[in-house]
Figure 1 (cartoon, rainbow, N blue to C red):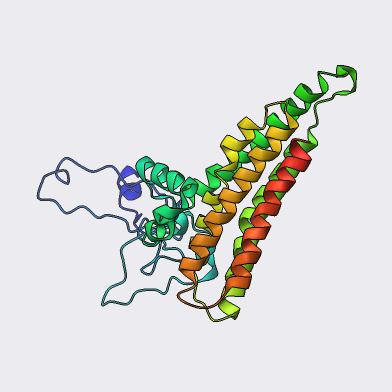
Figure 2 (cartoon, rainbow, N blue to C red; figure 1 turned 30 degrees about the horizontal axis):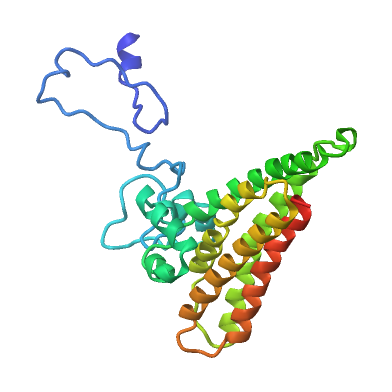
Length: 272
């Protein structure tokens, strides 16, 4: 009866346990049958591996023979983590150098991100600025009202909601809007480079938010005007370099004015 169970075929059963081998079958020269369940599995890798052209997904198993490569450009590529990995493949030295260039606009920021625009810096710059505006905005209000009556001061949690909505919305929607406008007027910009450039343009507001803790209203207006002017100048210079000789000064001026308007919003709402 045991011999009958041992001779049952098991290679076609997924997850089945192979029969116990006899001492003669364990010799080095004896052939061993290997199941192909792993090769034929339809489970996707996590994270999904990118396809031949960087998009889509690729199921596990050996690649197709005779050059029959499956097309990997389906909509599933947008949900593939590996598709966005190159935009976060930057070193600390590169990010620091780009941060310095965002404060000193004459340093050729567009040329530095031309070959490798990143999303790592813009993501953390925007997130850090959100938390700093929410925390320092409340602390600045406390410092100003401490001179009069602390009984009317309360910690405003709404600062965080406003900071997150405005900063994330601005960093995503404004570059996308100008990308489509530049394309409409004949330029050929890169959306990823626009996101990268606008993200780094917000860095100057991080040290400015610390200086805005000074409880002197006149100095606060000088600080925010300087930060807004530097950020607007950074956007204008780099957009002009991206236009490739096209006359798009109205769009560039609009982007600069919008950047300065963001600085005024930061002052009026968070550091009033």
